[in-house]
Every structure is written in C-alpha cells, then in structure tokens.
Amino acid sequence: MSNRLRKNHYLKNWKNLFNLIIMNNLKIILLALAVISITAFTYNNKENFTTGDGYKVGDIATDFSLKNIDGKMVSLADYKKAKGFIIIFTCNTCPVSVRNEDRILALDKKYKNSGFPVIAINPNNPAVQPGDSYELMKVRAKEKGFTFPYLFDDGQKIFPQYGASATPHVYILQKEKEGLKVKYIGGIDNSSRNPDTVTIKYAENAIDALLEGKPIEVTKTRAIGCSIKV
Amino acid sequence: MKEHVKIIVLALLLITIFSCKKEKEMLGQSNENEIIEVYDFNELEPLLNALDDNIYVVNFWATWCAPCVKELPYFQELHDSYKKQNVKVILVSLDFPDKFESQLIPFVKKKNISPQVILLDDPNENAWIPKIDETWSGALPATLIYTKNKRAFYEQSFTKESLFKELEKFI
Image (spheres, rainbow over the protein chains, first blue to last red):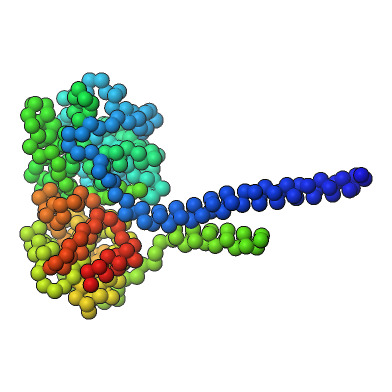
C-alpha cells in the first residue's frame, strides 16, 4: 500500500470509528436528552411536592451529618452534653424566616447553656432559590451574627425525613434512652409575622416544660411560613 | 437517518428551553380594587363558609412569596374567565401588617389585580390556620376551593392548567 492510500485508509477508519461511536451511543444520547426534557417539565410541577408523613411527636429523629457554614460537618452525636436540640429549618430568603432571626438567636442564647442548643438547617434547593446557596448562608450568618450552626441540607435529604413543610419550622428533640425523641413540632410562637403581637411562645414553653420534667402543653402548632423550595 | 437525529435532538432541546421559560404574565385590565380590606379571622371566616350558590376560590398568598406571585396571574385569569359563572376569587394576603401601605397596596395597584384582596391581620396564627384547613401547615401558597356542598384545600402551587382543572371539578 502506498503512503497516500494508507493515509486515506486511516482517515476512512477514523471516520468509521467516529460514526460507530455516535451510532452506538445514539440511544444513550437521545435518552439523556429525553431525561433532561422530562426533568425540565417536572421541575415546573415539583412545586406540588409534598413532604409526606415526616415525624410525629413521640417519634425518634434521625441524626445527620451536614456541612456547617465553617466548612465542618455537624452531627447531633457531636453534642455529648446536650439534653436535646432546637432544630429549626430556616433560610436566607424567606421573609418570615428573616423576621424570626432575632427570635431564633434569642432561643439559642436562652437555652444553649441549659442543654438545648439551636441547630439551624437550610432545606432549600439553591438551584431553585439562588439566594439560599451555601456561600450566601455564610454571608447571612455573618451579617446577623448567628451563634448557632447553620447547616446546609445538601441534596435535600434531611428535611423530608423530618417532614418540614415551611421555613421557619421548629422541631424540639430530647435525648432519651431510645434516641432523640421528637417533643414539639411547629412554630416558634403564635405570631410569626409580627414579633410585637406574640402572646404565646410555644417553643420556649415546650423547652421550659422539658427542663422542669413536666408534660408539654402544646406539642404541635402551625405558623405562616414560606414553602420549601425543591 | 442523521437528519432525523438532528431534528429529534433539536426538538428536545427546544422543549427543554421552553419548559424552563417562565409563563408570561397575563393580568386583567380592569381594576376593581379600590379598597383592600383588613380583616381579622372572625371577619374572614364567613367568606370561607358562604352558603350561597357561588363557587369560591380563596387563595392565600403574600407579595413576599415568590411562588404565590408566580401563580397570581392564573387566579386573575380565572376571575376574568369565570366571573359570569358564579365564581368568586378572593385573594387573602398574609403580607406583614406593617407593610400594608408600603408593599401590598402598591403591588395590587401596579399589577392591576381585580379580584377582591383582603389582608388577614390576625396574630394568633395557630388558632386560625387549622380552622381554614386541618391539613394546612401554614406554608404559602395555599388555596381553598369550595361551594356549599364541596370543599377542597391545596397546600401547593398551581399551574394555569392545574388551577382551571381543579375549578372545573366544582362547576
């Protein structure tokens, strides 16, 4: 074979090989595009997402390992001395959450030393709500001087287990023999939109009762909040 | 064969792009909303339990709630399309009471929202949220559709299609 012919032969082979790759992977390429299209469609409908059952008062809550704004992973098991936790699903962007930041700070200040620290978790998907990205969580926490961990529910795996449906949404847990028992689910108080018209502080009442070893009077409440962005 | 592939790929890409695009806002022309009433829950409650022959579509929303603002045009369209068929749309705002004049009123005016708008200013949320619906967590948006015989509550966002479809079940 002359050099020229050999070159042509190679070129032809390369072309064949290229075609072979494309054609062999055609199904995969089309499938990928179809998946993207379908995802784009369901993305619009995902607002209908419901959190399912989640925890009820009395259930045992799962521990987790979520990234804090300082880059470290945080688990509830790290808190050896804690008697329990005030888990609050909250975020940067929900105006109701923002209006409750001072109240969340006050809860942490009041109960951290009694063994019930606040653990805040951002449940939102930054792809849907860019203002709730991990980077912007750091910014908000610094601006507001958060005294508690502010964790990112990366992949949105934890909030559905808890059954959080809004921001802000509080879960008070107490360490018991069987594990972390859910003691209270709901609002911080009875007026999420206006701190000046609060008449009942549900979360505080629940922790006070736990600290005194008394039954909690109101274990489940509702409050106005933002839907979780999925 | 290759041409077909190109067409399919192009079509899928276009579908992807279009389905991501936000739906065009279509708001009504007439502004019937000269006054926004401020109610507490006791004042609102009769509007959630009317016994007349109307179909009531009560949307709970706020100007600060992005998914609410997104679906608001569909409620406007519903109001425009069905007002001759005894359908009453009521938009119950859960805006911050101290932002009534600075946010809610300008928003309603700017968007030419014509269905009735009410600001629910009642701090005792845990008392009235379950009275609106036992299943409601309090997250926005949420919608109640009812007649004197039938009632349904939706803690979700609507597309235009899904909203109109739900209403049709009541007609």
